Length: 623
Image 1: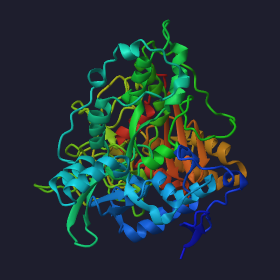
Image 2: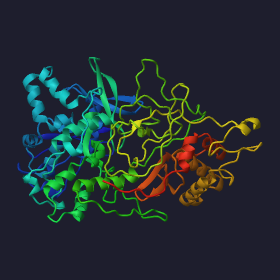
Image 3: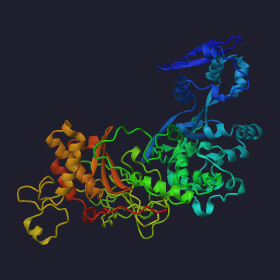
Image 4: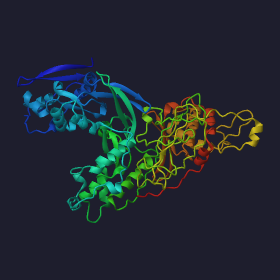
């Protein structure tokens, strides 16, 4: 057993139950708290849960009382917990630790006389339970409906459906920032505001918390799973959604509206461009509600702050000292409008954010180069893509159109003339991007595992959102050397290797058409790894990086970065326009120069041409 209870007796003679969990023990309070009297007017900030309490409640208590079930889907996996009072299923992020008897009343009932006893009473596991956060936050409302009408009543079911229900088939109204954001009144336009005021008095507009939230839910909807009631076995549909930050699955009630660029950093930056009359609370409210800086993230991601951007538009974690070859981010002049400032700032940052595309090497044996991912019958409905792993699931998948077969490793999103605005667009996202190849026709085959970049760079000069293109199978088959007669009559592709009679020309041969790209990859690999790799290993790694770059239409490799088991291949097209492709480093091991050369040669002609003509000039930052 990973936990152990212990009784604590107060001066009043009353007892509470504390818990130790594995290596965590209840906090030992010193003389300062023992001698500090507890008053009924003391705030909640004076007490808190012990680490041992949190671990026990979220693990052992939940396992015993909430019938956890492991759920595995093609979009990822998670644990779901059943709440009996609402008859609903929840991901762990959606759950709160709650006091059965309100905490202040419980402290009074136990006769807590000092702050040490108050904290122990607060952690009395005999008075704790896990509840959906939505129920906890609206406890008075929930208790009123439940106690008045009963668990099986229509009124209680409506209360539950309103907060946990989701109809994936219903079409959500598109949110228009220019029309749906609130119009400020004299109460805010005439009131001065300073960054020191922070979030005080600011909240999300009704349209943001309502219409935008519902619209975003549909964009981040992943799939629906069927769960069985723990005791009756009754079937129940549970919709699942992507967290926009971690890309993990969660239930609806686990999602929070979050500022990607944290509001505190934005507030300080706003002052640099304040109009002559200064910043008003109306300006602050506009910035707080600017939807280009909003997203739906799981409560765990929201509270950790790991996925928030700082004022330099990078993640808040300390990346360590600058290293040779690091590229500086030039500054840009922002426009006057506060909303435009937010949009422009987010657009500049997204030059490095939306340019990140996941990549995975083809599996062995390799599949047919143009095998479609979906095999559709006459009445078949198109399902969402199957991802290589849970961590590669897209945070916001629109409804997929009829599949257009794509080439191996093609970006998942493909722009078309009739692209529907199913994904959010950013007013300032005018980043240059290589043109995406047009998918060749194919002969339907059996479904295969996709290996493709997940996020495309933002389209230049096109404000329409991308639509989903169907994904291909893993990779091209190994290129078979054609007979000499056939070679004389067939036009080679831009990067096809003209083989000798004995062996093909490899990437590290100066005669290979992609040797220049290979040399930039080799230089980057050598700078990053130094003497940690032997010469043959460096050359093999460089060949793999060449395949990654070629697949993702990079004209060169600016650098590679190895970090915690992931290798990031980077191409800088210009200021604010960078493409980054991460791949698990373990996938590079064992890949040979010959294998990578064959895979490069097997890429479609459209991909070959696009990578050779990728843009290199800096885009204009718009708003």
